[in-house]
Length: 391
Image (cartoon, rainbow, N blue to C red; front, side, top):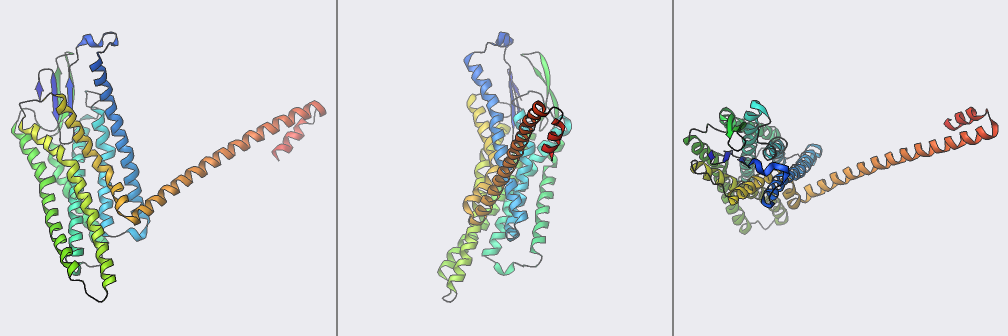
């Protein structure tokens, strides 16, 4: 989209804005105060993205490692949560750095293959997140409302197949994103130059962005969250009814079982609420732009709002492990154990390095001093002393 001296390129997760700066402002690097703040602000954005990537990598990798190495934690909900973490990792290591690069260079840096692959990965990750949450809600519904339908035999294998199906289904839904995304050339009036950028759809067709944004909002937000809401309505209804119909015998055991199921249901519900909160602003802004395609909003407020919505969407990919840390005592214990092991390994490694360095320094110093002394006193005895020091 173009308006005056600004070019706006919208995508589901990111937009790129290029506003011309007159050549006079670049002379002798004398920037007005506002422009200096603007450039500092732009360069601070990739730093924020870097923090999100770092926190997300630590949390999600630790979560996956715990669920893979601790046998007692290999259950149905945790397998789904691991799949969710893999999707978040994929987004963090591919899409977040690419989005950050848009503030550092007006040119698309990743070629035509990257232009088609990155949006595909973005939408696949979003699909994996929301459909996995839907599967988790269905699992909690079965565990609480219809516990007799759960079959223990081959349960983990079935869940692995379901998780794989979610990934394949998400990839299929993301194919149109790869098909329509392409490199397109733009003209910058300020510098009288052209540059190439990646756009998610043809810029000449105003109907395309409306269809794409609405389809994305329905498929990846409204419909899954509506299904999840129905599941949780029946879960809440069952838990309330069960609270008044507890059997007299075996009450303690039944209560413990109910509390365990309620905690798991609460954890999944928190994940769902986090997803809904983090992604709603991004969907709203995407819809707003798509339905005001011919009217470009160049205000600072719109730019800041878009940026915050995008950052909030990326934060969703790093916050789940820490939400689980607060909600699950077992996971918190294992997470702390992993951190303590990591600290211990670092401490041992640093102590070993320091010890070997100290020994080498002491060894060289003693050896040198010994050779000098014996050279002065005994003349040709220094070779024997040198050999003795090495022995």
